[in-house]
Length: 165
Image (cartoon, rainbow, N blue to C red; front, side, top):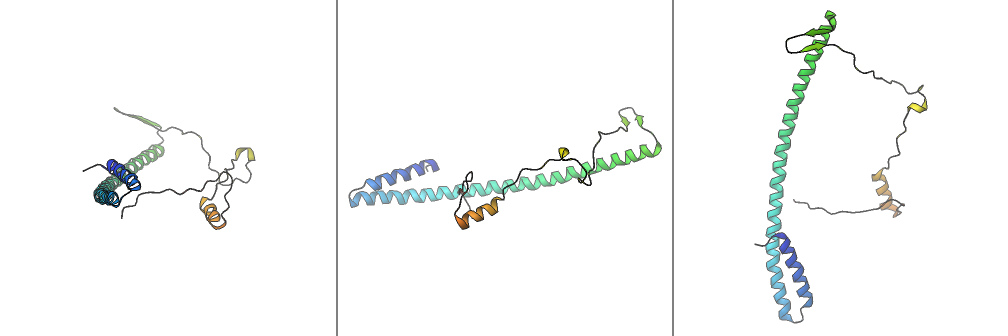
C-alpha cells in the first residue's frame, strides 16, 4: 500500500492525465485509476485518523497522571510549608534565632524588604506604569465582518485544520 504522500502524488498525476485525455476510453481509464486511488487514500486517511485518536487518548492518560502527580507534589509542598511555619513560630515564641544541629543549622533571618500598596492615590506618577492599550480582537473582527472595513496594520485571515469526528 502506498503512503499518503505517494497517494496524493498519484491523485495529482490522475488530474493531469484526466485533463489531457482526448478519447472516451482514456477518460474511463483515468476514472478507474481515480476510483482505486480514492479507496486507497480513504483507507490511508482513516488509518491515520485512528492513529491520531490513539495518540490523543494516550496524551489524555499522561495528562491525568501528570495532574495526579502535580496534586501529590502540591500536597508535599503544603506539608513542608506547614512544618516551616510551625518551626518559625516555635523559634520566635522561644526567642531563639539560631539552632545548630548535627546535620543542619536552622536560623531565622530577615527577608528582602517589600511593599504592600493599598492605595495608589498619593504615589507620584514617576512610580506608576501605564499599560499599553490592548486591542479587543473579538470586537474588531465582529466590526470588520459587519462593515467590511479593514484598518491599516490589520490582516483578516482564515486558516484550516483537520477535524476528526
